[in-house]
Image (cartoon, rainbow, N blue to C red; front, top):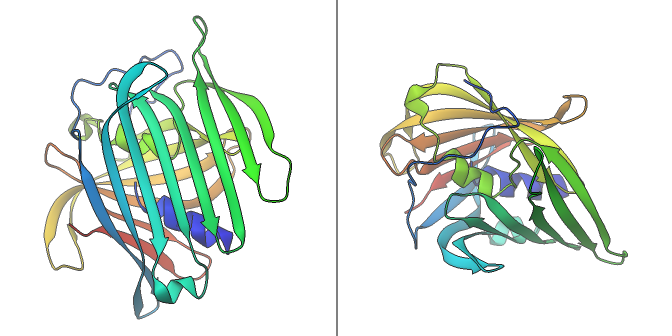
Length: 262
């Protein structure tokens, strides 16, 4: 059941491969201070469509460790009927520089009887191509785990990466191009393989249609490239804001869809 809860969080989002020495260079930010987006999350199985959860994603100016930047938050909670199956009250927080270089991330999970907190502090050495993650994992009825995990390239976490994806210039990509992005998760690093599917029209349940960039996200193990989680499809608006309009992912039974509500 915890897999389903994690999928709810993942579902809310949402080439030239980036080599390890490449510097993050963002020329334009498609979001602004105070942006807040609400999402409705639907469970789909056969002909059944049921609204299962809601999420709020927001970003604002803040400061972390003396550095001025952004703080983003994703809060997700299941609705009444879904609470009877698995009550979820999860919150993700991320601090980045104004250039979306991640500095700090935490996830506070309350999923049924499962309670946990993950804390990630980024380490940027003065030299070298690796980035470290000072990770603390706190679990109910267990001693906390702490360790440092290193990643080649420019790693992100599961919240800051979706803001970074909004900064990419998709019009310059070829169809089916893939971008590999390292992601800190738990005690390890996985690879998010972002495939650009192309431009399409997406119709939401509010009967509105939008032109969108469609992406397919696959998560694979950094060591042996085996599938880590089911793939996720993401639709971003093609206007200058590149807003995540819809996200869809499969569950062991059925699937979940998140759609912009405001």
